[in-house]
Amino acid sequence: MTYRGRIAPSPTGLLHLGHARTFFTAFQRSLKAGGTLVFRNEDLDPHRSRPDYAAAMLEDLRWLGIRWQEGPDVGGPFAPYAQSQRRERYLEIWRRLFAAGNLYPCTCSRRDLARIAEAPHEHAPHEAPSVRFEADETPMYPGTCRPAPGSPPPTGYDAPAGVHWRFRVQHGEAVQFIDGQFGPQRFLAAQDFGDFPVWSRDDIPAYQLAVVADDHDMRITEVVRGADLLLSTARQILIYRALGWTPPSWYHCPLVLDDHGERLAKRHDALAIRTLRQQGRRPEDLLGKSPT
Image 1 (tube, one colour):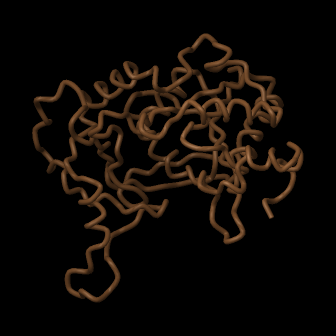
Image 2 (tube, rainbow, N blue to C red):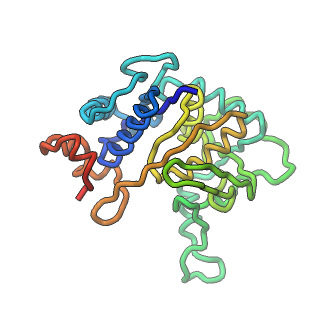
Image 3 (cartoon, rainbow, N blue to C red):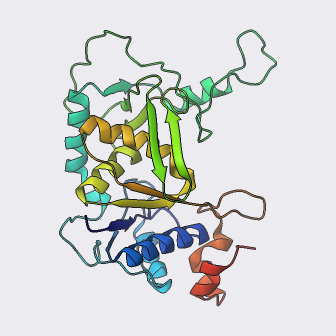
C-alpha cells in the first residue's frame, strides 16, 4: 500500500519546539517513502480551539519547510480534514461501538474522579492516596459506573449527549505492537489502563474515538507522534479491534524536554515556534539543536 502519513495539530495554543520536531519527522518519513502527507486540523474542542491558532499553526509549519498534499487548505479525496466538520462520522462510530456492547454511560464528574484520586487509604488516613495510576500517570478509572457482568445493555440512548461514555476494556487483554522508534510494546488492559472515555457529557467526541475514525477513513498507513501517546496507541488498537479494522503502523518520537526535564506543553511560550521565529531563529536551528 502506498505510504500515507499525517500531521494532526490542535489549534488550542501555539505550536512549540516539540511539535516542530515531531511534525518534521512525519514529513521526512513521508518524503523518504515517496508517499502522501495529510494535514488534519484536530479542532474537536470548541471551548479551546481558536481560528487564530489554526492560522498560526499552518503558517508556522510552512515556515519550517513542511509540505502536505492533503488538508483543509488544499483539499483532497478524504475531506473534510477538520474534525469539527466530521461529527456525523463520529456519531456513526459511537453507534457501532454502542450496539456491539463496547460502551457504557458514566455519570462520574471530573470532581468525582479527582475526589477518588485524592482520597486517603481506607485503613491508613495519613498515608498517600491508594488510587491506582495508569501508565501515562493519570488515575485509573475505578469502575464506578461499569455494569456488572451479565447486566443487560443500557437502554434509552439513541445519542451520546448528556453523560460520559467509556470504552469497556477486557481485564488482562494484551495489546502488543512494534513501534518504529522504540521497538516492541506491550500493555495489559485493566493493568496499564482502565475503561477510557470516548464521548463527553458535553456532547464532544473524545480524542481516542475521533483519531481512530479519521486515520482509518483517511487511509493512514503510519502514525507519527510523540512518545507521550504510546498508551493512547494501546487504547486505540482496542477500538480498531472492536470495529474490525486494521490499525496503521506506529512511530513515536522522543519527547523534547525543558530545562527542568519536563515535556514541553503549549504553556511554554518561550519555546513556541512563533516566539522563536520572532527572535530571528531559523528552521534549521529549531530542528537540529536542543531547546537549551
